[in-house]
Amino acid sequence: MDDLVYLDYKAKELANIKKGKKTMIIRGAMGRKLPNGRVQKGDVLYFIENIGNGMVMGKAVVNEVFNSGQLTKEGSIGLVEQNQDKLLLDEGLKKRFAGKRYLILIEIKDFEAVEPFMIDRTKYKNMDDWLPVERIENVKSN
Image 1 (tube, rainbow, N blue to C red):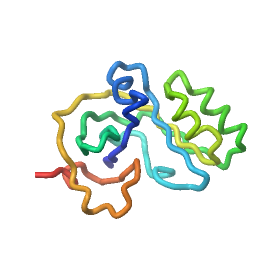
Image 2 (spheres, rainbow, N blue to C red; image 1 turned 45 degrees about the vertical axis):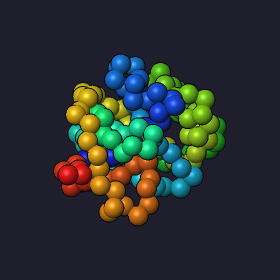
Image 3 (cartoon, rainbow, N blue to C red; image 1 turned 120 degrees about the vertical axis):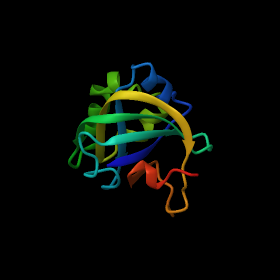
């Protein structure tokens, strides 16, 4: 399974992944939502920065996935802090995810820069920061 993952440009998430400093992606919400329960070890994540150009710039393989059960605010904050060395969240992203009831921590490996390509977003009514696409070829623009 392939997924499109939007990364925060201001927080330099993609740059830190490229340098090998950031090895974990986080998603979280007050309720269960994508990618909760949908990401598996071995899936391939394709990365787009949230700068509006829709260009896929890299990919990595999912090494491990942790889907939390319902967390307390304190438990959620503790989980983020415990994994901060892999997450490298800036203050804005910490504020965004710490305290959420459900967290998904996705450890990645084998990052590769790819020849940048555009995606076709017409199949997606709701543009979220995580899009399961089955196969990346299905959403590549021509």
